[in-house]
Amino acid sequence: MVKKWWHNTIGYQIYPKSFQDTNGDGIGDLKGVTAHLDDLADLGINVIWLCPINKSPMKDHGYDISDYEEIDPMFGCKDDLVELIQEADKHGIKILMDLVVNHTSVEHPWFQKALAEPNGKYGKYYIIKEGKDGREPNNWRSIFGGSAWEQIENTNLYYLHLFTKWQPDLNWENPILREKIYEMVNGWLDLGIKGFRIDAISHLKKDFTYQDLPSDGIDGYVDGFPYFSNVNGIGDFLAELRERTFARYDAMTIGEVDEGLPPDILLDFIGENGYFSTIFDFCHAKFLINSAQWKGSLTEMIDALKKCLFAKQNTINGKGMLCNYLENHDLPRIVERFIPEEEIDFYSKSMTGSINFFMPGIVFLYQGQAIGMMNYKKESITAFQDPTTFTQYAEYLKNGMTEAEALAQINLETREHARTPMQWTSEPYAGFSKSKPWFAVNPNYKQINYESQKNDPDSLYSFYKKMVALRKSETYQDLFIYGDIVPMYETESGIIGYERRLNNKSVLIVINAKPNETVLLLSRKIKGVLLSNYKKIMLQDDVLRLQRFQILVLDSDKN
Ligand code: GLC
Ligand code: CA
Image (cartoon, rainbow, N blue to C red):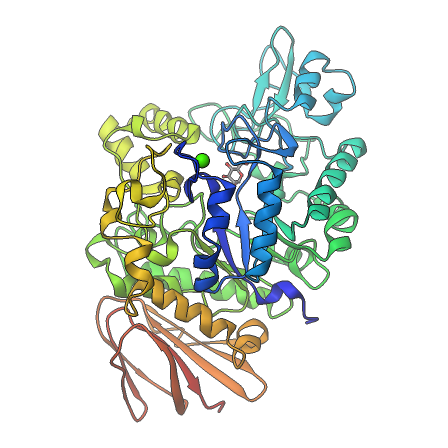
């Protein structure tokens, strides 16, 4: 593989609203990111992805952009961004933005003009169709629930919105719109942005041959994914986007694709000449330990998860870069997704963090992950903020759940858990802000916060720091980035084991994802221990006794 600067990335995702407030309005801002660059450099990361900071009415917390050229005043101004880019550079950190180009906000001037004149120039920037027999053009369901179409007042016209009704989809078939997007993207790259995470990229192309299909729910709608997700021909748009923008700047790009990306086109996306540097896929996102599927059965869930992780590696087979992330702003905290409540502690948290960390691919951590931030379960549905939470809750009630059941389900799965303010200190509001934050701080901040962990060699934060340092170490970085992966102990239930090999080096990773001891027979001579979440290593000859939730990275002989 031809080496690229972004192959050696330990990325860190920031949800700016919840990272650090510096002006006392209770909302995180760009200056807050700059203020923590020393801390981020201490962890060892070298790329930051900022969730959307463009001007937005914030119906979807910034994923509804009303001005692509401007920063939302809530976060600061362009000068603040330039300052962040420059200061980050001094710390060896590059800044990526979020590129949301599947849709805009309804408040974007393009959409306002489209509404005023649906058959005019700007009407062609969006997907506007005639209704059928007094209802929507077809029965597609929005990804966020309800119809994917919204009627334009006093007309028989409807606009498509795959997400909320405040996020009308852009019409990528229109070359004029595409030009506008390229211009805008290049503007940010000229400013010093080193790349983008590209939102909802699977959906740029829609298949409009599709009419109504039999509904798959009591709402009368149907899940139309095959018709708006990685549809044939999407590659033309993505290749053009790459050529006209990213490729000219050697930018790092991460496409958000859903699980449905067929293996035969995976390399078109992330192969050497792929549309993107890497992708965020949803392979592990569906694994929830307390869901009806797993009912708390950790070993079974881990076995299914490991199959999925290895299968993905096998498909890519060293010919492209996957991205090893676990948390983001759309998912509950990882430890509660994977670990039964009664087993949550330092060992299960550190084990969880390591699950895909040493696999081929680049790494992304999410704010709060390295200190083990947890879900903050709410006692009332009104304590949530996100429109999608309310739509989901209403759907549960419609489907016959009681209010208590619906709330319990929301508390299990809501993406809002990832959005509580960052827990920096044990001071009021966790040191996130001097005034009441926009979203309540998790009351556990006195026990779980950055300040109490940063200098404690036995903390979770220190463990993450060691993982980062090992991946980045001169001796092993090439092995972790470019080395082969050879799965091991595949039939051992609850064990994730594999070898990484490059030239004459070989490293063995063994993870015991079970709350009880396990014995493994080693077929390699061990030369040294590179990392463990336990002080005691129980290795005698070729017998390795793995403690509860132990993870070990071992330097081993190649044969
Ligand atoms: C992506 C974002 C999510 C957002 C959606 C619509 O999935 O990660 O937060 O709501 O796109 O833009
Ligand atoms: Ca602020």
